[in-house]
Length: 215
Image (cartoon, rainbow, N blue to C red; front, side, top):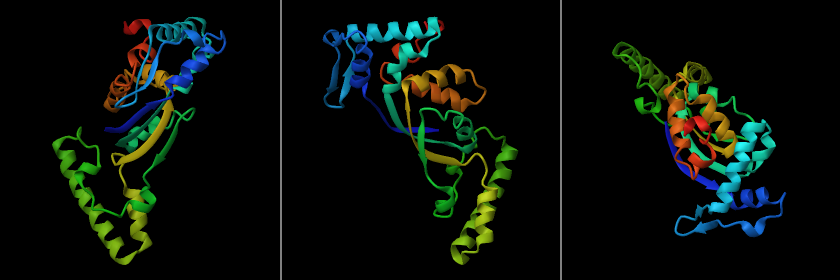
């Protein structure tokens, strides 16, 4: 599982919006677009306000308190197995994803073991999988040569759920809170890797993984 090209943006808009109800813009003390990486440095006043709003949302049960988190956006390229993507697809609200196409590109390159997440397979299962992959590769080569649609269907229908797919995903900090607390104890190791990635995001410990049980 890989995370590449992570970009977090719109802290400035989120803070400005959080201050709109009380018209307290003059109290904002954060610095944005700090060179060379365009980093955001949250000031004490702004971070304090954000944390109070998050705490109010938890204690009162009203998500409207922390709706500013919906305006802190994250865009990232994730490479993960199809069996994990099926679970991630549960999160349809406030997420957008564009994937590489198995329909159009499944035959474009030879199959390699690195194309699959098979690190948990036993020795016997891995040996069986290598034989399976050899059959897939022979079918792929035959399709490239003959363009026989029956071979293409064999590739699509035989493709295992361990196949790694790249998707460019956009989501926000509020969605990441929901994912983190729902999945951090999941039996799939991939969810633990995802939650570890969440904690690398700017101010994640202050704004995402900030419930009292985390302290």
